[in-house]
Length: 106
Image (tube, rainbow, N blue to C red; front, side):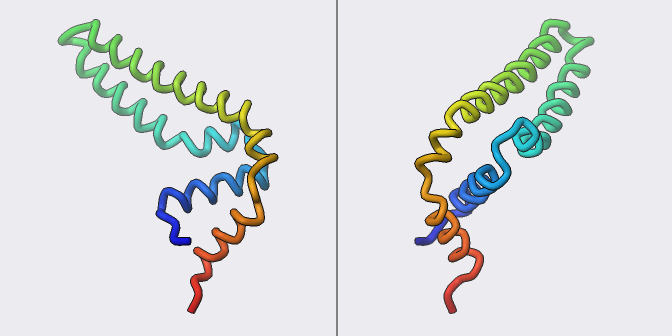
């Protein structure tokens, strides 16, 4: 089976979660770049907007807070569903797909 880049990344992540467990630490390590970019963009736009319109800077702070809370909601939902995923996933098949991609046939 030919995997797309996204599918391969997803399988690697799921295998990592299977081996180490799904924790807030793993989630933060996955999301820190997105959160940093969000802070820089919303913070920069908020500072730029402050002299022009105070309400606009509040809008950017609200956008950051909303995105952050959305991500935490995704974490909570995934965390609650993880035991079922762990139980029904065919981990041998996942490993076979990853191995096949890492070591292509000659």
